Image (cartoon, rainbow, N blue to C red):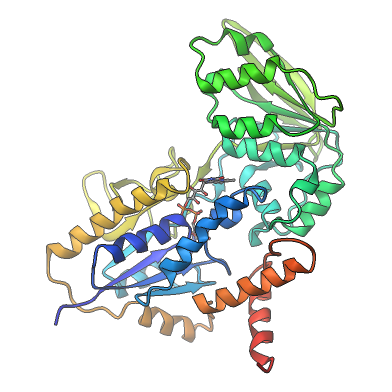
Length: 439
Ligand SMILES: Cc1cc2nc3c(=O)[nH]c(=O)nc-3n(C[C@H](O)[C@H](O)[C@H](O)COP(=O)(O)OP(=O)(O)OC[C@H]3O[C@@H](n4cnc5c(N)ncnc54)[C@H](O)[C@@H]3O)c2cc1C
C-alpha cells in the first residue's frame, strides 16, 4: 500500500488555505495539519482587510470549503515555535509549508520612532480590526493632526479610517473599542506623506478614488505643481490630478494634505509625539519643515517572523527560497521545508495573488514527494499527542465555527456583522460555556 504523505501547513491565512487547496486538487494522497496561532483562521482577511470592505471578506467561504475536506486537520490556537517546535513538525511530516505571513511593520529607522503616538500600520490596523495582539493599543486621537507615512493601499486604508465618519464603519466587524475611540477622535487634518512622485505611489486608483470620495473631505497638496508636472499621465496620476482640480465640498469636515517628494527625518517630542520633521527634496533643492501632530502611522511595508531556526533575509524580510523551497544556503534548499504567501514573496499583491503563489509552492512539494519512496510518518496525530501532553488545547474547525456563530450573535446585539473574540482565553471560555449548556 502506498504511504500517505503527511504535510503540515503553518498559518491559516490565504496562502495556507490556497496551498492546502492546491495539494488536495492535485490528487495527492495526503493528510494535512493546518496550524494557526490565533483563535480564528483567515489571517489578514480577518485582521488586515478594512472593516468597511466587507465584500472582500466573503472569500472566507472558499476557505471554509477547503477546511471541510476530511483530509485537513485544522488546529487553531497552536503557535509553531511556542506550543510545538518546527523540528517536531519536520520530524513527523514529509513536508512543512510555512504560510506565516509578514506581521511586523517595517521601521523607518529615524529618530523618535519609539515615541508614544508613533506606530506602524501593523499595530494601527490590528487595533481597529480587533487583532488579539493589539488589544491594549490606544492610538493618540486627541490631537487635531495625524500623519500617515507611505502611499500604498494600506496607507489609503489608514487615511480613510481616520477621515471617515464612524457611522461608515459601524455595522461591520471593527473592534468596538476602536469604534468608540474613533467616534471621539479630534483628528481633523491628516497628512499623507510619500518620498516619491505622484506616479510612484503604490496605491491603486480604486483605493485612492474611494479615499477622495469621502463626504466632507477637502484635499490639499503641499506642492500642487508636483501633481501636474509629472510626465506621462498614468491612470494614477490622472486620479491625483482630478483630486487636485476638484472644488472643496460644501462642508469641510476633515482635510487631507498630500505631500510628495517628502521623507520623515525625525519624530519629535518628550516621551510623546509632538511633531514630525520632514525633508522635502525635489530637483537639487532640499528643505526641512515640521508638522505638529499627535499621531503618526508608518505604512511602509512588513517583514516576516518565521518560527525559530528558519532563515530570514534581513533586507527583504522574507524567507530565502527558490519557487517555494526554503534555501538553507546559497546553493541548496532545506529538504522538506517550504514557504508561501507574504513570507515567501513579501507584502505584495491582493488576496488572489496568494493562490497562484500557493500553486507554485505546492508543485515543489509534489515534485519532491514523487521523486523518491517515502517512509510512513505519524503526521498531525503525533503533534496532537504532543499538544495534549503539554496541555495545549487546539481549536478545531468545528470549534471555530461555534466561535463564529457566537461572534455573529454578539454582533446582532449591537447592530454589527460580528464582534470578534478577543483572544484565546475568551475563546476557551465561550467554548466551555457552550459545552456546559444543555442542548
Ligand atoms: C492592512 C491590510 C489590508 C489589506 N487589504 C486587502 C484588500 O483590501 N484586498 C486584498 O486583496 N488584499 C488585502 N491585503 C493583502 C492580503 O491580506 C494578503 O495578500 C494576504 O493576507 C497574505 O496572506 P498570507 O497567508 O501570506 O499571510 P496572512 O494573511 O498574514 O496569514 C498568516 C497566518 O499565519 C499565522 N501564523 C503566523 N505565525 C504563526 C506560527 N508561528 N504558528 C501558527 N500560525 C502562525 C497568522 O496568525 C496568520 O493567521 C491587505 C493587507 C493588509 C496588511
